[in-house]
Length: 403
Image (cartoon, rainbow, N blue to C red; front, side):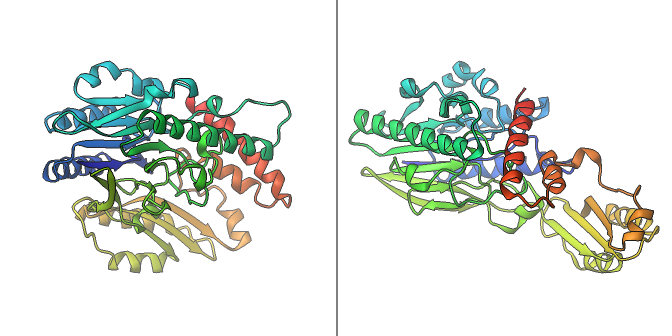
């Protein structure tokens, strides 16, 4: 039996207001063809289906259109919610989707009801040859009890202890109920030592806190979502499935993949299938002259329009920069091969900066509140104070986004 694990679709994602729906459609076309070609029996999706917990109608349509196409193949699906997803939104069509062999787990049922997230994997003869623990993003209330006056260190310790308890309990329960078949799990969290990319929200609450790898080693195999770069936590046992497309400019530098598991005679064989690229994302930095020259050398290697992030650094204030950028974007639009989606202009001379204080090509809705706070407190000397400020602001920001 073959199983595919993918994660971090982020349907509805916009990169500096540029819709990535075409990227997702091409990925879904590829994924469905791969499922059919490789006779995949189960597709496991490890969270962050959507980019927002209240997805747009277009994003919702993209999701359900994919599931409809999946039902035409002999492939079943198990889908969990990630930190970007609304558990209730994922769970709403639960009963309907189950009729089509699609199991969704939006909300964690609690440590005393973990059997509800155990899903058997059946072969063509309806024999159970493995079991999956589908562990959605664990919200704070499932992990720790809030104590009055707790500092960052106490909160971090409680989160790690709570996660360890939940995962060890699930692992022990699986061993007791299914002693003779492979035990697979999917989850959405941040493991210790992994690095988040620009497109991942740096919100240190719930299971976003880095969990020690040894506390996750409770299964024969654990496929994870949240770290877009697809990092290995424990070779052959705990692995991140990468995001299927580049969701941020810096994500253009690594290979996107899905995990393939082949279950043979109670053993699990792991391999990776690279996802073909369909778009280039470029960062170009330098003086206006240097940027213009470098862009002339860039090539669009793929079917979709290349997107450019530009940073202009000039010593002296130059009022012509804005006009030159506009002309450059117009020229690129004529060929329709490249598009500037974000520009930043920095004049290093202090006097020039004061003169150009009103010149800001970056749109307000592209600012990341957490990044803004990081810049504001950058000069503070007390590192512990900065860490606590960032954690508390991130928690408040996460609550606002959730509501």
